[in-house]
Image (tube, rainbow, N blue to C red; front, side):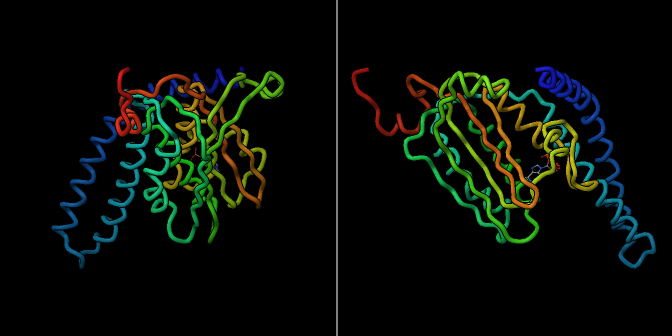
Length: 261
Ligand code: ADP
């Protein structure tokens, strides 16, 4: 509980910091980029400064990307939860995820046949999966495999007494596994901290899993991570089952409206 509290406080201060600074910072980067581009054009490729200007442009572009991510992380996004079948939501972005992880890595999809409904903003599912897929891709050095699956899980009192923070109930499971490099214990204990990254400068922001954690907590869900160095990693995300009627916006209801209700 103590570490969760620290986590929440860190997220909040990061949000405030980012909101205050990132916006101005992005504007200044715009000035740098604009002038660099103009100087490049005027100098021409043969000019001795040209290569230097290219490098400035690259670094400023990377900084702008990072700032954008920071802003996205800090922004209090208005979310619109919907009652949905996670299988459909995942199927809608599979093509995008395949593109994200590249051709050398296989993406396997194992939907659970009779999945329970959840109540969540579908774009938050997209965000979770995109972040997990990028990490899985980066953990795989050559060729490899990423698997996404769904399932249904019931946590009883006994399970929850052994897993701190878990609350008994029915949950929909979304799991993403990779056979990449895995993590040492020291890394594993820090992965949800904002800005914690083992990727090099300009590559990682350390905000991916902090974002995932924030979304899952916001939706009263839980995360388990299993990782073995040299073997791979599994992220298991549990979202509370939604019991009751699907919302009117649910596509399956629109397709087969119940008359006389
Ligand atoms: P970033 O990807 O920018 O580093 P994240 O918060 O997404 O930030 O991840 C934090 C760190 O957790 C990564 O730098 C990496 O060390 C570790 N990590 C996350 N996912 C995996 C994975 N699937 N396999 C191995 N290490 C991982």
